[in-house]
Image (tube, rainbow over all chains, first blue to last red; front, side, top):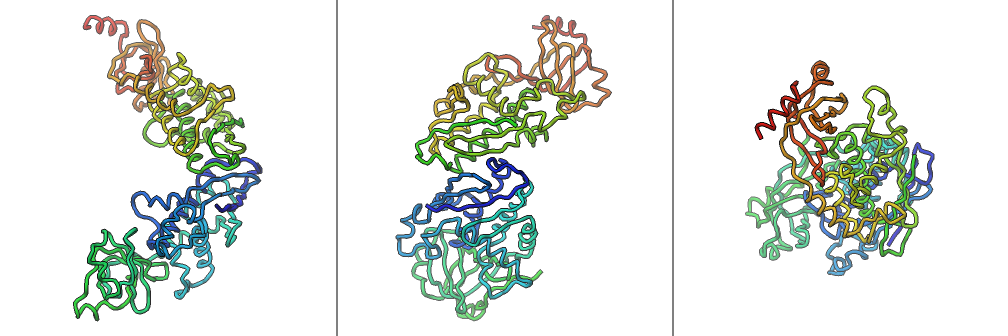
Length: 271
Length: 260
């Protein structure tokens, strides 16, 4: 169990009480943002319709206290809540079981703030893989916190990120420049698949792409691991145009002419 | 600002922190319940589709703290949050300026739990809403206490009681009623009808009306038709009308009696 501190500066002079609407708005951002940041690490998408997996719910099962304008959040480490997931031969290799969902939340939030500090978004940076459009939408929820009388929110652990009303246009701007998803076909080596959440990794020109299948993997897919496959689906991009994930319902062995035709990494369609 | 203590009994040894899920559930029922209790006093209904009026939102903008298993809720008085409610024009006579939304919530809760005769302090949607407390008990709480004397305790048994009580409320039905239209309040379209012949005051809500239509009916003998909603004991809690027309209330009454 880890404890995090969040300092809330408000226009109100009361140090012991917190406005309920402010508190609810802040907790919504932290809880949904933590769920999203965790899911993004494993599936390449922060949100999907329907209830999140139970382990994500457990990982964001926080306890809180509030005193002297500080919110104290207690959260379990990933090991505490889903030991079996991490014991199964690197089932979730993307995650560090010693960390908590709030660590991932703060990493994603810091990535957004850091990215905004460059005049041009650096295309060789991997920071933008830590957030997607839906997660930016959740971060944009901070505007409700400021509408309820907050002046700044400072996360005192880790990156010590401070969110102020000036941060809101950053979230809005980045949301608006995320490229639209587009239909693609791509050939690459199927590195691995994970039945638990239907995700797979595809190696294309030394670049590892994350993908997710719309249906459960059929038995034949297991025999394709380590071989060249053709994936047809929808590519989702980061703000700098890198592929964040591919959602597919078709993984097949390519024909000879397809091997040469679909070798290039997909690029977003420019508006 | 008034401060209220809500004690949460649970098995957790940590008395300084509270589960976020438990707290969110508790706050949600408390806020929506307070809105409902306030609205019930003024309109005779705790809930209606759509956003509540701004004054109800302002009156239920609470602050909070948590210490030693006690949730402390700060609630502004109605006069602090919405002084205009007590201006002469459109005054809400059913409400007291020194009271808070939590006072009305606790009053409704007391009427329910203590089986008081004042069964017009709650309705079916409010009882349904209070059943939302059951989620708290899946989050590790054993009981919630809204008063220090034990009168306002909520536990799993209480949830069953809310459900039983809600099932006892008679279903709404279409009615016609004659009487003198005593008052119409323009801001929430509520009215009071003094029935013929037994002089009972019935609360109702009209369809939108122009000022001219209101003036033509006010203080007159009218016939209203609409849907009547009831309390557990069968008293009319409100009538939602679709028509109010001028009529000789005594003649209408006699005519209906003859028909029966």
